[in-house]
Image (cartoon, rainbow, N blue to C red):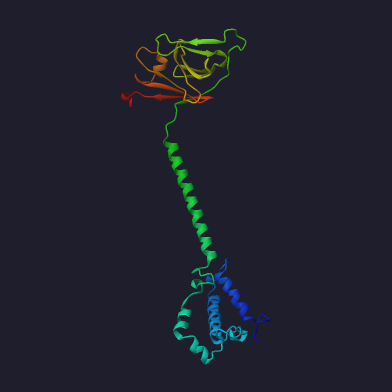
Length: 272
């Protein structure tokens, strides 16, 4: 018996190792043409040995499988059992495309790795697309002209007259009774001083006051589940600080966001 690298040559073990390289989870035989040729040689010798043995014959002997560099012994009975057409077809098929004992046409480990890679690439592409869409939306979305920050409350908590009433001289809004201990300033925008408070029904309110004359322009209260928005229109005869730089018919909109108030400018249609 021949030896390889100082060890006794075991063709069955070599065939098993080559099959593992061709069909196992970590298959790497595609990059080794010599290993592919050797696998085909051993597979052919194994099939001939099985055909010569017959259904009830003994198991294949190591001598039935060729040693490296030697052609396997071929008996006349073996030539009859394995036709020349079958041998030519078997030699033409690459080990990477042979059916393994589980019936798969390609190594299942490689297919599974490819499937995972495609799923990962698909998820990465979806994340990139979502980020691009969000970025476009953020870039094109309208933004407020200013964001007013809440200041410190200045009301006297020990004042006897806790409740105060905001009313409109022109009857533009209903009288609002609010707790002065909850009055919170947010600064001014376009000559309009902005305040928030809580009314006698525990609803949040937004109060707009003309900064120069301290005249109440708007007082709006809404349930906590709703959006708290108050508008001031720019009309003839209004405060020049409010109308400054704005076309008649424009609207200043203030939206309460808790610790901030967003100030928006809605221009008149004719001014666009």
